[in-house]
Length: 421
Image 1 (cartoon, rainbow, N blue to C red):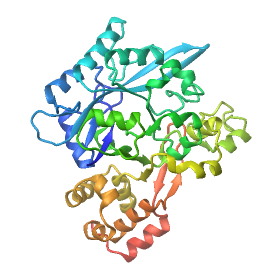
Image 2: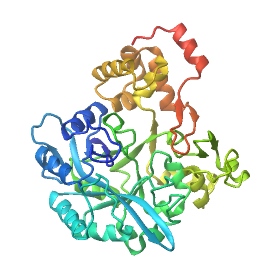
Image 3: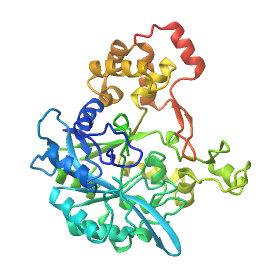
Image 4: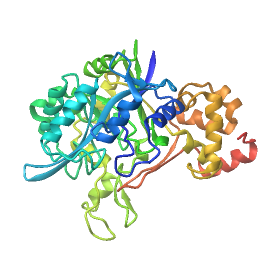
């Protein structure tokens, strides 16, 4: 049974998140997207945990479903915590995702944090002021089958390898607890080949998740499993054992679209690749202040493999597929913003015809796509699947841009072909 999962999202109780995020709305949008197992998110927040209990019930295998069975979506208990602490005369900041198989473990974890005086009510992603090693210890004491996943490990500000406040190796970060971590999250600004350049990460399986703060961003990155049943234990074992028969692929955002892929200064409109940053000695040529060092630069700093060496061993890793969100493709074709009313109307029409977004992006044959969306739309999906895209890298908090057509091509195609939308 092919199963698509997204293990890292947020509730409306996390900072800068949509107020439309409720458990029923998450279940509804998971079906629209084609996500089979979705993170509950934010189980450390008392009010959100109460909503989880009110809306969901155990499926008997460590996952959860809606009590009213309105949608088929399965949920996995999850949260993200923010660790801000001092170690080695440096302020460390990193985010960690934690997944549990039952409510009892969640409550034990939360109770321990509250006894330590931590405020779990202020934010769905609480700032705990604890060393990452302490978090792992508390989580293991709550349930030994916990899944601990360092989040978006390369982002500059809050990550295990972040250029601003991270570490240079997993062992340096987690010490003796490293053996209890089976997976790390690559984040939107990196993809698997970038991570494969760093041999320190070979001990982990790479996962990809949306880190969505809104319903529409669910599944912008995800994971593809082949499971016998909807089971926490199967997911746990697939990640722990790096089982390529169970864990089939990650589904990737193009990393150039991530908002910290390249180096730069947004205020000064300066975007540099690592070579340009080195040439400018890490300084912005406009204001002369240090640039925000992005993910690509940080990867190259820690890389101990060449691209040629990687080519020889890449088959040992879990494969990946790079996609563009459906609304972005529609917006490019229609030459309007991806959040526009026109794009939303077309999107809903395509979902009705194509079952869900992932089915359209991954599975439906090109000839069938011509019938439901027109020739230009089918050509766009064909190019995306082949990796024939145009990339403009994000930097310093600014998302990048991924396009399947040049401006000249889209004008020509729209002139020659009837757009069926």
